[in-house]
Image (cartoon, rainbow, N blue to C red):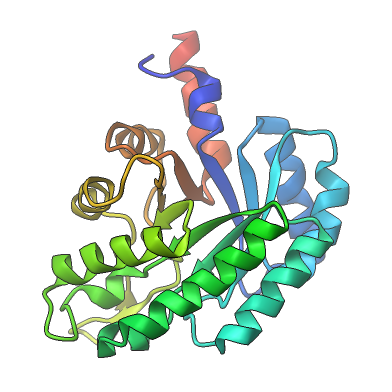
Length: 245
């Protein structure tokens, strides 16, 4: 195999973010993360304390989403949400930018918003992943094309103190021509673009649409160090099957 089991498992942030997630499903997901030796669980803020209890001693980090999924909370709300999550034991924060402000070209607002969360998290010993929600940027905005606005956001996020830039929430549903809603999530093009436009000190996280082992390997090949996933067990069980063969 191209990568070891641990190299791939320690890329995965197991996503436990469905709106209908029950307490039992949350607990089962945390236990799965410990069993498979993952990097982290990515959970809703109210669940941080319980996840920390379940994962104590496992080596799996607890991460919380902030301003999720659309980034529309006031900056001070995001800061306080970050404070509460960190006080409850979260050591990673996945925040969503204010997408409307980015599409409006209010770059100062976007940068202040990100910096406020990064400053709060860093002083509490947590690291921050900044989510762009690239599906909403597909047509560009603020006089910029799609790639140009993503490049601008990479540079803003780095200046503001981001530890990762992240493609998507997995909930960036866009209305399609037939009236249905869907999303692409982490595309090869966007991962290449984001990796190329951040310095080596900023990592890249893929999220949305990575559902099998080959997809996870491709994400790593493209330079991402983390990947949000729900099909975690299927991917890593497939690794073990290939390893055995």
